[in-house]
Length: 69
Image (cartoon, rainbow, N blue to C red):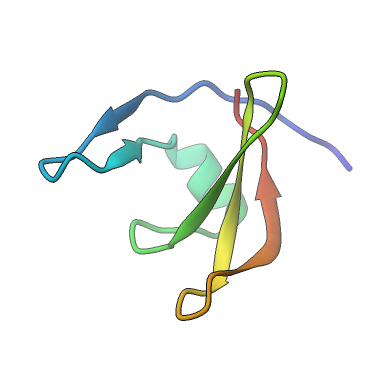
């Protein structure tokens, strides 16, 4: 598997929810758009993985993954 890493800013929206602005390159490569629900997973080394939530109704993550740092 060929992995790339990116840096992205994490902030808060007007409701105090955490948001991350992913570069367009990531969205295009992963097939995600502004409406794609992602699951965040923190790793022990300080990096995070994002997985597409394949079924937002039950919280089950799909197999699509990317690992920005």
